[in-house]
Length: 278
Image 1 (cartoon, rainbow, N blue to C red):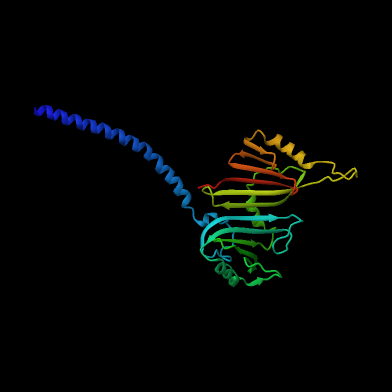
Image 2: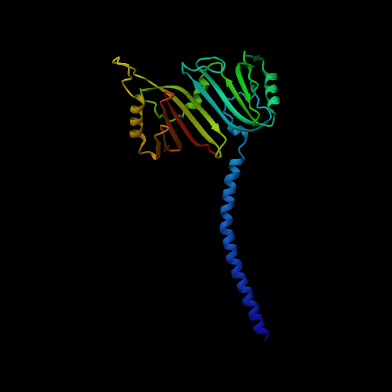
């Protein structure tokens, strides 16, 4: 009798052990997935705002007032003769910075007005923008009441040799094309998708004009470029094209490439993005 009861108890314990083992195995199997995802998420989230500030941005001269998070920081160099900066300059280079601030619009704009060595006023003032000089830099500050601040910090010399360091690893896409002229380039850090590096350029297209004087443009340069680019890039990984927007996309190593032919603007736009190394 006692032996029978003991056997039953042993059987029940054995069944429980088996059930526990199955449950533990399933939990353990799923449990290993979650920490990996959490680690990835955490590694992205633990990046600080300084990770998205370009080395060289004059943070000691132009502070980020009540900084909460840097959204992006880019440097632009523009040599387009048809373009002027917000300060009326031709041929210019500037840092563009977007960041979330805990300051109100009024507090934010007043802070920068207070640290200007001199404020630049214009005939028609905009209540959302202030401009001024801070040391050697001309600075434009914007805030539209949505918790986001915008800074444009103009360098005194667009040919400053330190600028070129940002573009040393710019992939040589479109570099050898004689039908277009480079007029702007940028390099930046984006606080999205765990962090991205972005390169951009835009080119103007050389128009051959009306050579036979019949009142019509002789050559459709954009059609020639479209045909040339399609032939050159169509076999790239994940190639995709959209006729309506004149956009082509593909993967080139680490870079996601977007090339847009904009006939309305008379320009070719190039953008490359890759993940920021952890």
